[in-house]
Length: 138
Image (tube, rainbow, N blue to C red; front, side, top):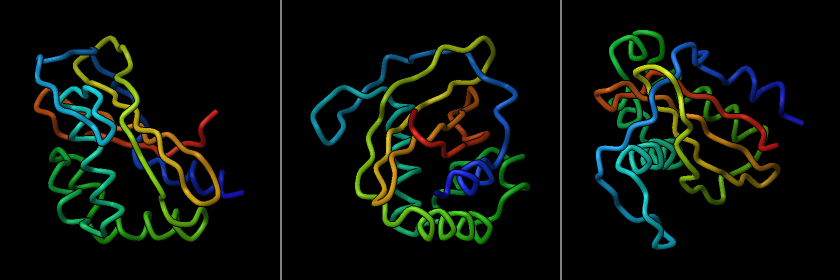
């Protein structure tokens, strides 16, 4: 249920998956675990969606993403996801996936009322979001 919608929510196909890098900066998540800086940005992006701060979320996009998706479009997508899956109850940084080019891909695990998902957020070297997906957790 809602899995088709989740696939449609994939805003941009992550054609350019990036090199797994770490600038050494870390923070802590809500559970006290170490989270790389880019992981904190991904968590903040998901938090912006949950809080309805779509302008703040779009401010994290690169120029191309900003041209592809407005804050209003992002709101439509998020409302559709919430209609299908209920409220997002919790979310937490999971890991950075190793890739082969200049992008970093951060995974954030999420628990909605109706399903578990993984937010996949891709960043360029400037730590701007270049794409994201919301996929059912396997």
